[in-house]
Length: 150
Image (tube, rainbow, N blue to C red; front, side):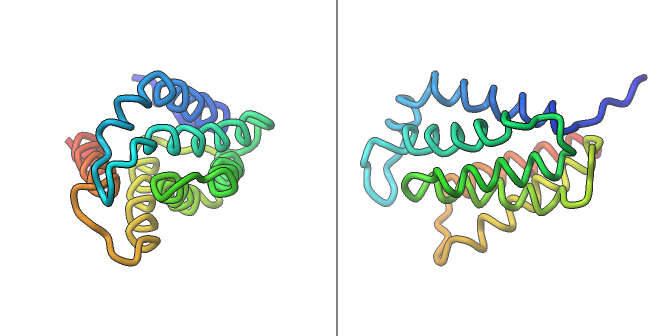
C-alpha cells in the first residue's frame, strides 16, 4: 500500500476545493447561524475568509507545506470577515503552527496539525460557547483522529 503525503500543492488544492464547496453552500450556513444573533451572513463571512486564504496559497503552491499553510493562514487573517471568519482564520493559524518545519506530512501528522487548530481557535475566543463552529470543528477533528488510530 502506497503512503500518500500531504504537500503544499495538495494542501492548496484542498483549501481551494473547500472554498468552492463553501461558496456553493454558503446560504445553508447563513441559515444555520443563530448565535450570538441570527445575522444571516456567517456563510458569506466564512467564504470570503477562506477565499482569501485559498488565493494566498494559490500564488505559490509548490512551496513546502509549512510555508503554504502559513500563507493560507495569513491570507485568511487579512481577509477575515465577522466573528466566524476570524475564528476560521485562527483554526488555520493553528494548523499552520502544527505544520511548522514540515515539507510534507502523513495523515497522522496532519491529524496532529488539525488538533493544533482546535487549541488555537479555543485560545482565540475569550469566552468559547459550545454549539458554535468551535464545537463542530473540535468534534470533527476528534472523530477524524480516532479514525486515523483505528
